[in-house]
Length: 331
Image (cartoon, rainbow, N blue to C red):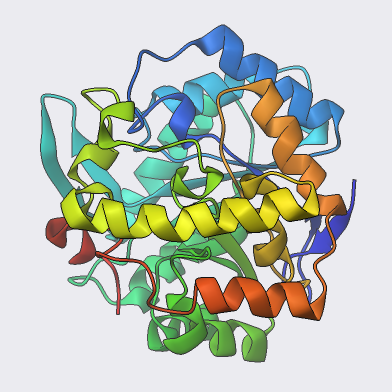
């Protein structure tokens, strides 16, 4: 397995991680814990070390699942989880953000218990709380490091100024943001420039565009009734049709190269810098293997230019989240 250092002075992890969210939440269908654990074990067998979860996935059930999967293989895992988004199991539409220091401590204690571990390797603030100074939240996270409950700190969907202020309180090891061929905001909003200046690692989530860039989704009816994507602007109406035309061109490029659309999309992300560690998710071993094989795909300058011509920044139709969820993104 190829490896990557998260940031200038951070830990060494596998060059591709595994996002575990979809095993328990948001993408519809009843979760199959046995199949999910098989995927996690296969990932570890192939040298994947970075596993990514969060307390709100489920909520809570994904951390329990991951904890069960790694119970006897903890030494092989660089474990990342997140806090800060609060869901109401009785009302799927209700959510809040909490960055209060007392909540940070309580959330960490709860995650440790669910995961069945003594420490969390990388602890992210999942969303920035606009009502709590980032200095206060990161100060509380730093105390978790002092207590030995957390090793490294991260932020998710944080703006450049927020990243700088947080990093001044305690070193931030990784920033996680959606990034893929159809979500290229970090290139233009200052996030890439900021993390590279400060020596912070970058972890792209949804590097396959929530599955759309795999080319396997050809109709909104491909989603289960409870799949979050049915309510996402990019997967609706004219936006879906326009985005599908882009993906069909990516599929054609991939076929010419003898690889899958997923591998082409992941290889493109990996080609954007050796300081990026994408975390594609999957519920199936065969797709895990397909994703990992993207590490062996080399794209020439001409191929990269061809991809960029098809999928320039802002090419995707529709916002990446519904308006209510975009409001929670720190910008």
